Image 1 (cartoon, rainbow, N blue to C red):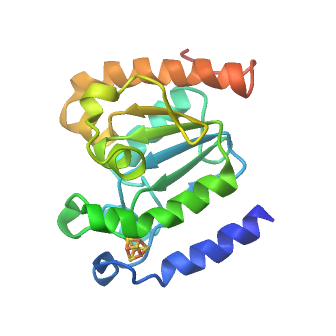
Image 2 (cartoon, rainbow, N blue to C red):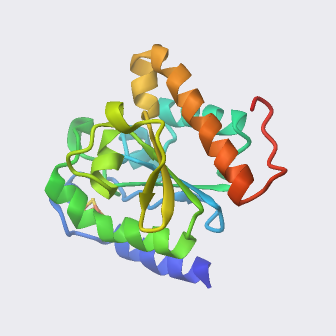
Length: 196
Ligand code: SF4
């Protein structure tokens, strides 16, 4: 059932022309992972590699994200679903505008409604602004649980910020500890993580 709904929505996304980002895309990037996951990770938008491959987080940032998730006991094949605020690549990887974010948001809201994750991790300020608070500052709210529409939301830094400034890794790791703790409380007390 959910797979069919996902297929229908994905088709809609692939032919969407709601905002001007469709003019620059090779293809739209819908999302990836297990749609029955209790953990959902939301990023900003596709970059060059994602636009080529049609999958989110497959470039350098994606490889780092996979490492972080793996260390916390999660993987896209098994127990996490990954999507972005905008589904088409902004030219030259610029930040999506507020109008582009809000044009694309209904797709993400439907994805969240279908998945109904117990926990949402927001990666970076565009994800925070796009989903919860247009004025939000990731530096101020990261590492603190937020309640949004009944979901537990943990904002943290985007992996591309960690590539620019490796010092931030420590903070992301602290945030992921809280995610694992919450996951054990809410989803699976036996959740295994090699490092936490
Ligand atoms: S970014 Fe979203 S709203 Fe804009 S064209 Fe792509 S799918 Fe449509």
